[in-house]
Image (cartoon, rainbow, N blue to C red; front, side, top):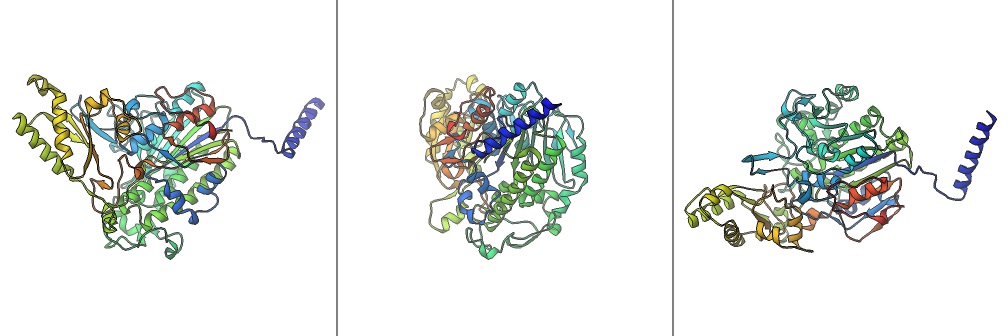
Length: 546
């Protein structure tokens, strides 16, 4: 007994001596990694709204962690599914195969959704919203590699309002992935890919009617007169909600929700992020994350920022309020991690799956080149052009995601050279208004592009899944409504996103050296001492780590 007491006393003396000398006493092993993705977060949201942020959210991550200020996506298209897949696989669509949110499957002759899976069943809902899995993701994720390294003892839980944003980060081996089913339900659900029934903690959360509690007025958190970092509240560039004449504060969600998808209205407000934060805290407790000898993963994707951006645009009061409120929710999450896992015992990274362009109609109003691309008109015209040359109207199977897909059987049966057809369509498309560049399959398979738009297209090109001709539109041009904003291009407003590291094993500092999205998974893998994802192409950011 005395020897035990002496050992404890010696340990205490060493600990206090280390503290006195300023040496760190944080655990060497990270107990929990929390990966945070903020959907549609441009880099400049960190700096633009900085004065409105508190000290415990974004600023805590920046001031006490490491900030990569020149971080970019190194491929196109910049959409949600490929974004989340690239963050966690450490590579690009060229390797992991998630080339868009949905795409034309030339083998099945139909459009497919990135995570849809008819072989599994919904869990937690009677609808088909749970028939999802990561089966189309070709490579492993860093979350998979952690599961393999720990002999499947380290847990992985993925959560988001969006199914794809919960499923793809959690990888193939996750213990659970949960997403929000709105409409009349207002519950978090999952898939039989993971389990046969919801765990008690999820059922308890759903039964608590948390979602219902957020069907309340949405007013600005701070005095709207102080929101000088965004445009006028009343303007012609925003969408708004059905049942309300103007897209202006306040919004009575309790009365607007029946006309706007029931509980789905929460997705387009900052309350969706607050609800997800509540669910994240419940997941930490319910799964006992970060409480044993093996590192766990919690992947959190805040989707409401994307819905608000699509509805109201980059320059809206609504987007400013959403980020101010998200900052408070981040602080709430970090405080909970300090308490539940322990200060210095967890590691956080925060990034985005893409950025967004300012509403083109707004840009045009201030004389910045911008505009709208008529996708339907282009498809009609290019089909007519090809039919006129070849006397057939069945050479093109599909045009989607700014890609043209050929019918190779028809080409073969009629001895039509595919490369010649690619060149003809490329030449025609380049004459079309708002088309900036065109790439063909032959170019992408044969040429090596470097430091150019071609490199981004090539990194997003999957030989089996992608099309045959690829369009790049002019800067500031989108195929979308004239209110609200969108994303998907190779331009900096879509590629430049935040990258923050914080916590165990992370240095304080910042860099303006260029980093790219695939660097995240490799850096986290190196930090944990585990194998990299099996298709990785990113580098380890050594300056980030202690």
